[in-house]
Image (cartoon, rainbow, N blue to C red; front, side, top):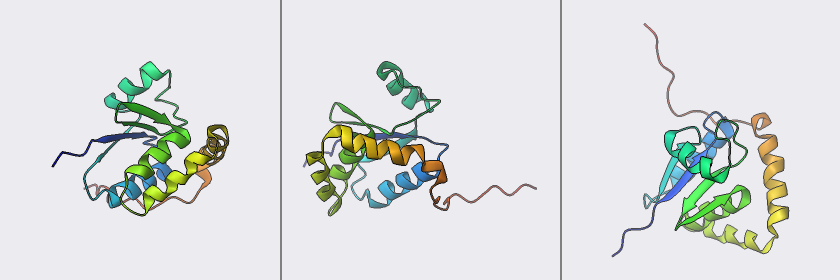
Length: 128
């Protein structure tokens, strides 16, 4: 049996909506295939630099899997295809032209700070 390939997901660590998506991924990652980190982490900066992306002002999730790099809607479809059933069914999104998928992605991304935010699972520090 071969070890499944690791999928790296870099996201806006300052965005509660994005953190909610990371929680969604990790809740469904029953095979331990995903590793997630903020774009501003050393690993995220190392990936973003050569792509010409500004990790300090993220406008896209970045996925690295199987030697491929995905941005925007491509990244989301790459994630869906690697999640367990039924999420790979979202791969049907590949029939939509990328420019349309990315337009929808940008619309959501530009408003993500206005969307309802999930509750953080890490309890706040208690100061003494």
